[in-house]
View (cartoon, rainbow, N blue to C red):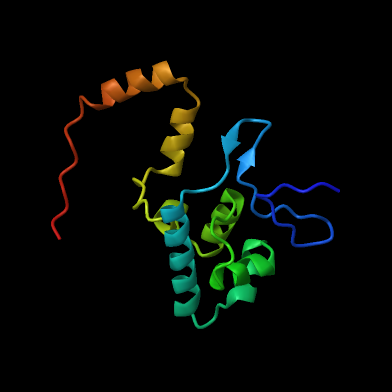
Length: 142
C-alpha cells in the first residue's frame, strides 16, 4: 500500500480525508489557510452556540467522519476537503462562503436560476442586457 504525504487515512477502508491535489484534473481541492481557519472557527462557534448540537451530532447530520470534526476542534485539521465544507455547511443550514469568511452571496431565486441555466452564456448576456432596461428596485430603508 502506498500513501501520499497530503492524505490522512482515518479508517481501514482508507477514507481519504484531506487530499490537497487531484492529479486527474489538475486542481487543488482545499482552501487557503485563512479561509480554512475562518471556516473551522465559524463551524466550532456554531456548534458551541447550539445547545442541541455537539461534534458527534454534527458529524452524523453532515455525513462526515466523526474524527474529522474532533480533529478540527483539536487543531489537527488545517484544511478540510471541500466536500466536507459543503456537507457541514448544509448540516448547519449555513452558506459555505459565509462560513469561510467570503461574505454573503447575492440571493437569487431558485426558479430564476433554473430558468437562466437553460440558456448558454451568450443568451444569458442578452437576457441581462434586456433586464438592465428595467428601472432598479427601490432600496429598502432600515
